[in-house]
Amino acid sequence: MPRLENIVIPGQGPMSLVDVSSALSRAVVTWEDLKWIRDLWKGPIVVKGVLIAEDAKRAVDEGVAAIVVSNHGGRQLDCVSPSLRALPEVVAAVNGRAEILMDGGVRRGSDVVKALCLGARAVLIGRAYAYGLAAAGQAGVARALEILRADVDRTMRLLGCSSVAALDATYLNRTREDW
Ligand SMILES: Cc1cc2nc3c(=O)[nH]c(=O)nc-3n(C[C@H](O)[C@H](O)[C@H](O)COP(=O)(O)O)c2cc1C
Image (cartoon, rainbow, N blue to C red):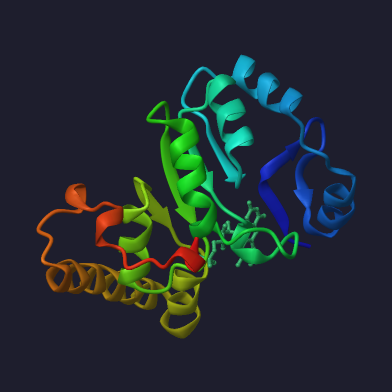
């Protein structure tokens, strides 16, 4: 039976995969847990899954180095905001006090560029690389990254922008209804 090597139960070793569902169904993560982690770990902490200004400010006040604006790929609570839509609110709330990353729905280079325009420092990808992995193993992952990188380059060229550092919201064609 496979085990999750990164979840170690004291005295028992890595958690067995069959126990994951019941463990998750009992799990509730609170701000107290973040305090506990902050006390134990002196290195940088990245909090993932933030979608609103209030949580972003609180996370920064608790000492995190970075926030990942994420709805976990839309796989958890239905009807929450798309990450890209939540991004500007979080960027404004954090106001440079921590790095902001985002994920969710990044499938092409122009998605990366849009996130950077809205203030993300970088994006993460979940399924985009996994599709490459399923199709062709390691070579497929390398190819997926290559496609994304080439598409970012192409998008930058078509925008007439020579540096990702220069991207900002003025490059976006937004209607009032969009936001
Ligand atoms: C199969 C699968 C399992 C995932 N499991 C977790 C998880 O255990 N914890 C978590 O925070 N996010 C989890 N995610 C969400 C990813 O970390 C990430 O936020 C999401 O996949 C990004 O969206 P994208 O797939 O559209 O790029 C999972 C995603 C997938 C596809």
